[in-house]
Image (cartoon, rainbow, N blue to C red):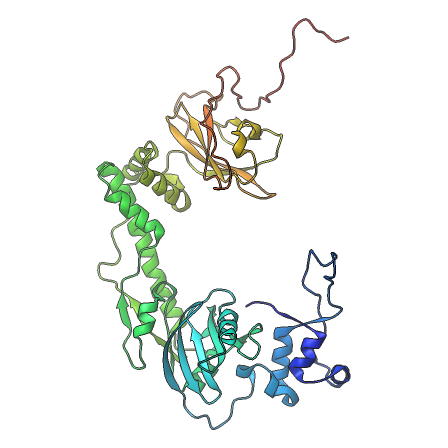
Length: 449
């Protein structure tokens, strides 16, 4: 839920009082919200930009007004006391919004628009867009999902079109009471516009196959590529099946949580509108790890773009199957030598990178090891806390500790930078080893005086 702050003038406009009336409220109500710290503004000290003398938390003030009889008509709409004889609402149909699919409900308090999106500030953005367009549909309140569970159903965040910049929490049960019927809910992975558009009151839950995400699509593409052998196909297929099984289980678990009967005798007014297609679930996964390790080793030796993409997926999901082991992060400070931790670690100086890669905008690189005949992805990070993340290769039997760095080549450089030059291998006599700092050699013929 987003935060909003109101100046003294804005507080007076919301409550319909003047400066003296505001002074009176502070003394009349002990629970009147107190001024809070203004949001930090780094440019406040420059020019005419100055911090306001006093600011109020907009959500806190809006909630207080709704609960105070004198100002309830100026407070949050869904937090005001509901009338005892509510006229049942009716469904108003599907609507497209700037933050995704929504359903309208015509109620005794006006039109409520529920946006099936749990992103931050979704309700405020939709309410502001409606206000800017003149609110042609006459929507009074915009609700959006909060991504959590409330007492009477999924948690909601609301924003009134009268004050679109202020968000507050609303109860699912209160909105369902205004609508006059249980409200539909879609799990996150099945919250698709085409499903929400087809829904109508009384419709059964749609049975839908969980869509593949980007990582699964990458692995399936590698499995269909004849450039890789059957061992690699088995390795990526196993990981893709595991991802699909996890996503299907997550949808079923979400439906169990958000569609449960409730805490008391009255069930939660929730209608599960979509369930995953479990035909063939779970897919076969978890076979021989030795076979999968061999398949990933062959992918690591390949320069094919699909192989590189698959390795990036495996790094985040199961790096133990990869030949270069786990991820190690070390600090990246200009002018110092970075030492990776491990039995076959190398020293890398930041100033040995290509000239265009020296700024901190460089996001990654490849550390090539001739002894292993494959590249080791590295991430240099961004910002003040930049770090060098090195995927350390497994040490072959009998390999000596002083493994030398062959070359360092950047990748994923921002487009506005110059294209980096070709990787320049280090001279074998000058390649640093573990624990050895690179310095200027002592000149002969000169001793200490």
